[in-house]
Length: 289
Image 1 (cartoon, rainbow, N blue to C red):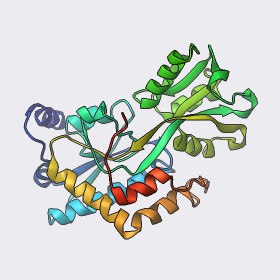
Image 2 (cartoon, rainbow, N blue to C red; image 1 turned 90 degrees about the horizontal axis):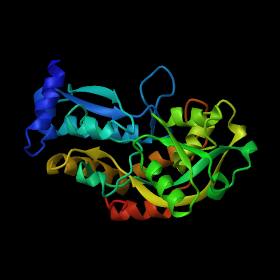
Image 3 (cartoon, rainbow, N blue to C red; image 1 turned 135 degrees about the vertical axis):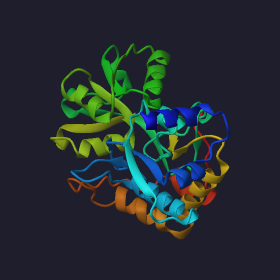
């Protein structure tokens, strides 16, 4: 109850956020993770979360400890979903979320984004036997997506603009949405293409699935922080920018996108996009519209 009251008090002050002060006074930093956002942030066994974004989070944590001159700062992990990640950040339950979160102008009204560290677009995961190859093949059929994602909005708009009359069914997280297709309750799963490749590789029978369809709306991923906290924003951007300058970011990319990843040793085989390579130099936090 005390933690709930503290979070409520933090959210209700209306003052400028000061995450570093909050961490210094509490002696802990609470970081978010996703359970099934392969290869960004996910569970791959009995240990804690792993992934590309998890390693960026860990680098931020080390920078916080150094800034506050306190290596004993406790790190607490908090699982989040697409639906609750922004509220949990705003109310002080979590201090940073680095996962598979799209940086866009709507969310930018509620949270602050760091430097963009990936670019993706909405595509479809289907069973090969379905014969579905693109969006028109799904006219008047059920399409799954995940609650609280931009993909659900993108696919709704595409259906409306093209008179396809999709029936959208939503899972609480990516694994749940995939199960809707696996169980025959939907014909396709609309999501960021990189997440679909990760989910396909971890499916019971990966060879039964394929990613199809044109890429809709290129979107950047970035870490989320609370708004109006320039000190913490500068620290996070400093960590990511430093990795981009030193070459550590590219090594991390190779590890998670071009090499075998747990738990099954799948290789996503996804070379760095032009947008991301350009951003290694630009270090932009420009949102999708």
